[in-house]
Image (cartoon, rainbow, N blue to C red; front, side, top):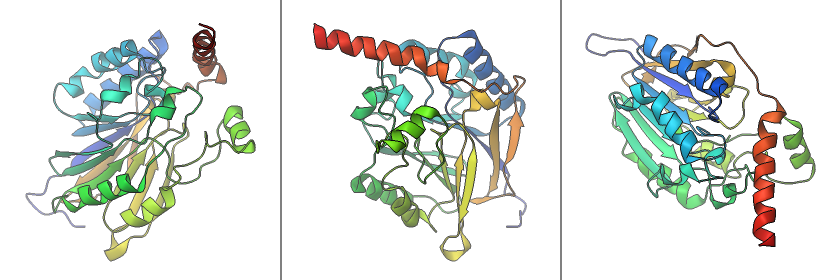
Length: 283
């Protein structure tokens, strides 16, 4: 839509799946992302889950330390992912006991949705879950969205089927396990969101993807998976004004090059979880 005087263009950055594990590599990647965000003078930043790798309090404290320049200025919103629920269950408290809550910043209305559950305390049970009651809560939240604000839903797990990205995911699907599947109510949820929301921003899968669904009244619903921002060394940035996106999002790169993780990144925490469970069973 045309921009007139008095209607500033604001920016929104989408990050996800940082998997901070207290290693020098993950610290360096995260710090480089924060430097890039500050260099771009982004108005607001969202992180859609998996801030930590094993749900540890130490990992979460490292996140707060690295992202302090954004947290201290009220420019950062984040939600939990499945990796934030094992271990110390650091992500359990981030939504303050709510499955759905809203955040308002100038020109932006965020509906934050927690798609994790008690089953994610199991390191291997990585899938998400939402109920019809929670979809109803999102509907009610969107009713309160002010005119002239861009409306975005934040959720960790993917809402539509996406290709498996690793051997464990392919094996889980082959065995009929839900671990790699999309949210069971995802397709129905998107139908309910069409025409009432502008963006669905998620993570969970580490390869970035996007899809556009036509909505009522010429208001498309755009679905973006950020991928793993620390692996990619980059993030998407959206420009918006008067409640509408302005052009296509752009990729902004940090000073750290892309560094895909191998399956080995999950071997140690998986073994630690198994040893702990064996110990509980024996003693």
